[in-house]
Image 1 (spheres, one colour):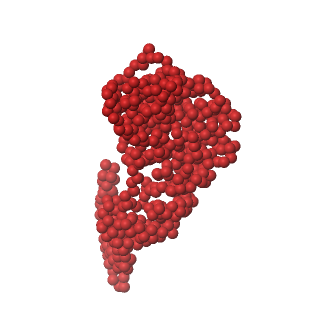
Image 2 (cartoon, one colour; image 1 turned 60 degrees about the horizontal axis):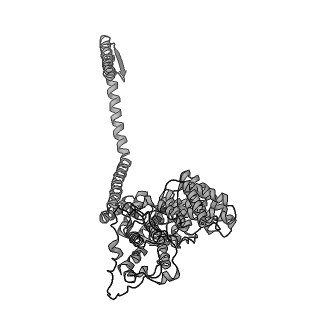
Image 3 (cartoon, rainbow, N blue to C red; image 1 turned 135 degrees about the vertical axis):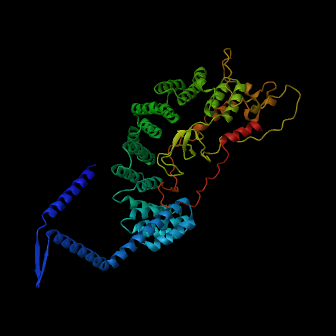
Length: 572
């Protein structure tokens, strides 16, 4: 609306000026070389305007003719730029979609049009990676690494190619060189940290972690957790007890819920005679994260205590944390050691409806201790098919003890205490455990004899896995007393033919076998010093500049689990 008003005002002003000039024509006389020209002022103004317009047109034509070569060159450069942009963009799309032939064709066109452009170099490297020409890809990344504008990108590509051909020394060199850049990329900082952890250079890893915090690559919470893990690993590798104690205490302070740090600090403090400090560390860690290692370390603080005193200490520790299955299992194990069978049964009762392997094994040991072999056999069979207990698991790798890094991916603080098969599909599970402690017993060939009917096999007596019914404990059950030597040697009537090979021998031997299953999960925990693998895992960064056409190698299938071997005893 304002423009319309302005236009009308301008037209009115021009019309007013034209009318005013027409009413006052005036006279103009021009004498040039004897020629006199008489005209009006309005005509003179029109003639001057015509001459000016003609002069401008002639100047524009002459200027265009003079600048024609430069204009044509600029137009050609613009057309080449458009064609190069289309070739690079379409080539990157072809690389992303996996079309190697189109990517190769568009790469050749982009190199012909704009051979020195950064995006052209990136397209050439990715196209070579897609077609499997890793030599060309490495040469292109090296050219990019010698340029200031593509230096970090070229180092990233060289790092990925070195990882792909398992040249870990070269990969570490490229990662460290990229980490020295002003803007430290996340992949370089993480790669240097993981390489140093795998090599066991805990001091270098701590230094790199501090730099990551200063560069704001990680937050404060992640920094405290990872520093606690590194300090724990450094304390485990230390030979100086005082230095190891200081490192473990600092780690437990940074991350109170880190079980290995608390257990190691408590063990070292207990050996130094500072039991109160050790107990406080364990109690704080137990409140944050109940774990069997903490219960074992708490009991080990007073090695001279009796079984009943250990039970009292474990009950006091369990009361200071949340109601958890680990607390119930620790109390039940201590009660069995103290022969407080009622306390053990009370502790395990809430978890017998859907028991895990440790619960079923402890129930079998409890029934065996009270002389009920039938129920012990039943619980032993249920233990074979029960759910797995939590274990130290990282990337589907199950370890008997905690490790600071994953031996599969090299990630720091990857191990979690959880059921390895919980949740979604985890793929192939590799169990890292020793051979089972119970050797396989060959099946005996029994000769049919007259007498009582043979007892059913345990596999036939075992209830279904989803069965919720449990037998109530008998109130009139006789008190168990240890059998004498004559009773152990003299079998009861009909017992010789009904026993399986696992239950052969005297009662004392049977109790040892039942206890072996309950204590199997603790068999490998005496050695608290993990061995760092010497193999650096192949890790691909999430922002890999080129696709990897080679499928990752699948892990080797695990050997048969120890529970499968025990199950074979009952099938014989």
